[in-house]
Image 1 (cartoon, one colour):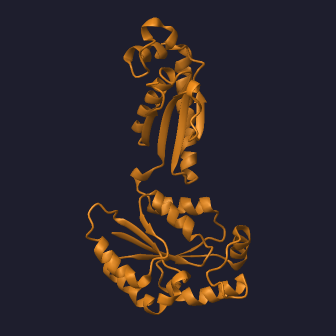
Image 2 (cartoon, rainbow, N blue to C red):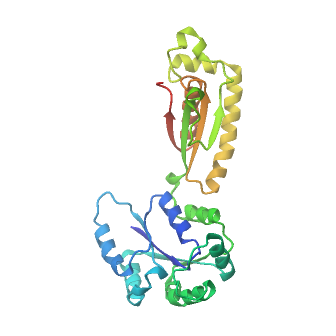
Image 3 (tube, rainbow, N blue to C red):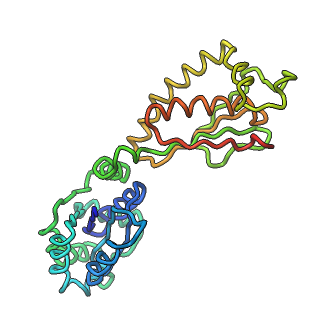
Length: 281
């Protein structure tokens, strides 16, 4: 198993780090009791259908277990090969983040945030000392931290998911769309009597659309545009992208283009799912 123990100073980005791990298939547990971790991993190791990637947040919120924690973490490192990741940031940045979110510090008994951060550093300092990697998030935005996680821990097959959808404007715009492209400028097979009852999945409709010169130019430009754009979204750490193509009824033009585009993107190695929302309406 690939086991990560994520710790660090409150406000340094542990939540962002864990959400990025969840997006690439890690089993994640926040604020997990240290004294239960070894027993849990022993049971989890023999669970069928489990993810081989696990991550657990261990931080100041469970300070009552810290007396036994050092021995537990060292045993887990030795027994399971777990890696400890410690996140920290400068006090100035942490104070600014607390002001922006208006959250209280876990050491709420401390008179102010600055004192609480100093006390927290003292309490969790031993985890930092035995960490395999210390990450300073002072100059990282949440997007940059997420990109770091994806680059370091995601496998090639865990690329951003692409959802390509066809729809009909007559039935409304899909609310889940990140991007909508209108293909109603193409000649409509609905007005060709022998094609009216067919869909964009049929060979005859496909041949009709492909015979249009404007389609040929459009599809080349569309392909170049998406080949350029999709990696930019991936670099931003986006987990999925929903691109929707609309025509009048959602049965002919948009369906055909979605299928043609999906075929191209799959050939380029992208993880693509296809939905024809209105094809049977």
